[in-house]
Length: 117
View 1 (spheres, rainbow, N blue to C red):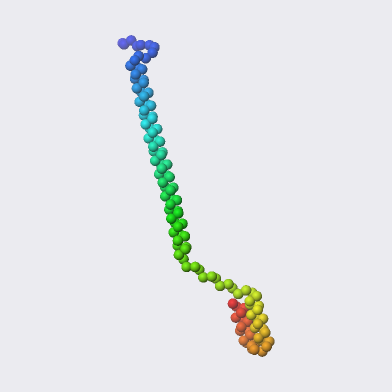
View 2: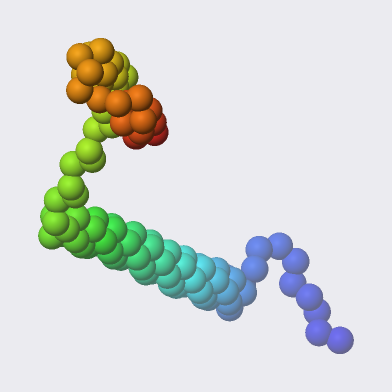
């Protein structure tokens, strides 16, 4: 049996321990650098995707505005005759009947036309 030495480690033990610690530190450092580089690449990819999305949205808006600008102007809607316009037409019609210029049938026909429009 080999006698075991007690107390502090010898020169070889100290060198071995130092080598293990150095190797572990190097491995950890390398892993941290790789993770950091991977995170940077992921962030850059996300940033590029976000920028591309903004460019696509701007292009879609520009295309929509361009299409809207090229459309012919819509015809203005014809306003419906106001109620006062009907009243004035009926009043004029009644005046014509009172003067004897319209018969009862003509008056009824024109009155129905004015009220239906």
